[in-house]
Length: 188
Image 1 (spheres, one colour):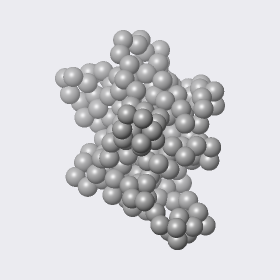
Image 2 (cartoon, helix red, strand yellow; image 1 turned 180 degrees about the horizontal axis):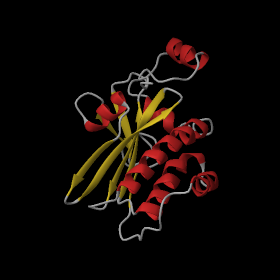
Image 3 (cartoon, rainbow, N blue to C red; image 1 turned 90 degrees about the vertical axis):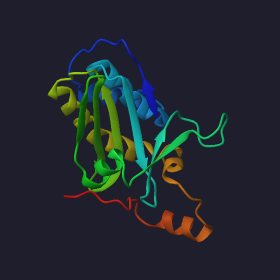
Image 4 (cartoon, rainbow, N blue to C red; image 1 turned 90 degrees about the horizontal axis):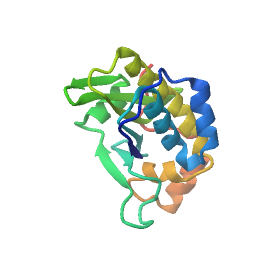
């Protein structure tokens, strides 16, 4: 999901307690939107995107809103290849990537929980953003992993992002019986 908000005044580093309170107030399908709102409020993030890894490990799905594919005006997700993209490199290497440009600071951080590479948090900050803002994005990416793991019990939104191909009945049954994990494992 992508949230773009401009003109918000920064109020300081993100507080984990405030972040979790906002996420708990939101519906499970809106958890990422709540995280984006906190990043916008605290570090003046201009754009916030969460990209979730698909089951096959070849794509990251960027949610543009909370609708599922086919629920209205077309496909609600953009598929970003893992190979040959900045987001894919962040996913595979599990390293933060910061690109400082005159138009803004582009930050990509891995979203990983206990070795499971869930996806990538991508944030556009104002030009000249301080190192503390980048650290805040990295910390938020780590918290987002646990937020997604918890929220996906209550919504199928994240599962829709993880499906780049339909599963047959046998594959669906097998997937439901096995412990949840991504085919893309994080480095330790």
